[in-house]
Length: 88
Image (tube, rainbow, N blue to C red; front, side, top):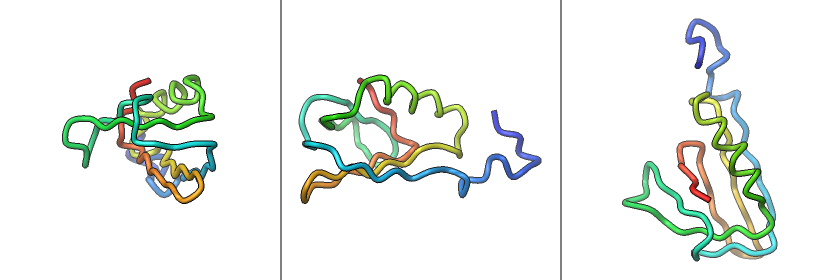
């Protein structure tokens, strides 16, 4: 939980990762849900382990802190904001 009486919960203390992966596609792999996604959306991100997604999910209770991720693969790009729920 955030201590709102301090700046510990300032969203400017969050992190944005830019990660180049071997392949990226709107295909089965992960299921994304959250703001801006009508129901759910598929995303396949090659080269990222399920353990990574588990660790990212562990950050959810710390909102507004969190991890925004920009994945790239050649000319493809996918952004997964900290508010997105990722199901492996």
